Length: 261
Ligand SMILES: [Zn+2]
Ligand SMILES: [Zn+2]
Image (cartoon, rainbow, N blue to C red; front, top):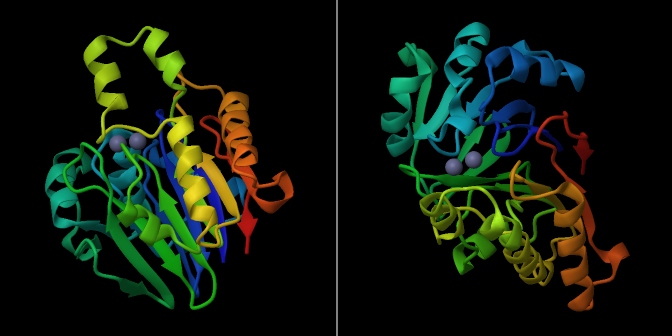
């Protein structure tokens, strides 16, 4: 399988997934032309995309969905709750490009198994995704207010995991955001802090996860080096040596690296 976090963060999210003979996008939260440009930068023609999976209806995940789907004739996959909440913002969608799935029930696109699982987040019906081509498993989970046993089960044993490391709690507390927004981000349906991300990875290590991409970093309440160091330090304190766990970062404003596994 191949995976590339094209862009990730509070200013827009889109990721590339390839396996089982198909090429997919998870979210398109930037202008359609930006998403297309990022794909081209990684050697993938936008017209080759077989499907666009949506995690939830927040604008940093759907801003480019309508334009990208129409321009390249790409089917869009979302659950009913997300479709209802998203449709007022996508522009006209042809019924032939609209696919609905049920949260918690896996399905296939080509030879790739797709498992949408519920996430704790303040959107209509948010999900994360696990993908499997029969061999390796990839899990994408951002926009999660807290990490729980269900998420642990969903991501267990992933060969590669993209997980949110949204904010440093002190930066958020002392930063310029108004109090209600701070409370929303820190809440159990908001975003995952660097510390909570580290705790999640320590638990996931025991299920066999050895490689993670830290994602959805806040522009105002995090710094790439700080996220990386916080998680790395927590892993060391849990007796997980650096060489035992590969950590990477998904960038907010630069196309990410292509992973093969
Ligand atoms: Zn969100
Ligand atoms: Zn988001």
